[in-house]
Image (cartoon, rainbow, N blue to C red; front, top):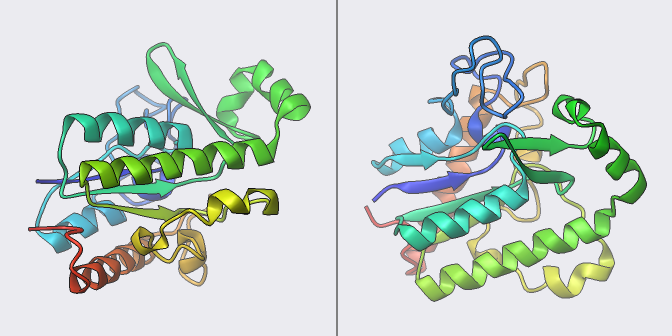
Length: 231
């Protein structure tokens, strides 16, 4: 069985050598010719799959939201049994928006949002960061319970820093960090001293480091008797 990874540009492999420099409006579309660009073979999900001797279904897109991660993690794992499902959570100020049949990443201040003036107006006038944090925690805890019920091995990690308001501690305390990779930190922090691209994504060394962190976690869980990945 393969592993499933869902995340954003950090899991997709933006700015790695086999990914176009300029992605299009729809996250993974090539702006020049409209082709759907595949995740990088040098991104940490591919490196992890190779280390585990399996294949990866990497559904990450540039600009992917937590709403999208939750939606796909649930729908895919209902239909399929994976050796491991990895949710690489992202910033909470992104929205799951479908436009012309495609996932459209909308993030505050991102270029894609400029095509939709209503989004900027909404964000300026109505966005509530605490409510977005609450929604994300609800998604995380829902998946945590669902995976346990389904006996689906999983791991959670954060791609970038997410600060949770103290009023939401009653939810964040429910997170089972045993199945989280260095939950007190995030991938960007892990790789802060390593080379980055012009747009701030960590490059090959960073992806290798992230893959190593996952391998270490998997080995620790195996030693503890949890079937996080059975080759």
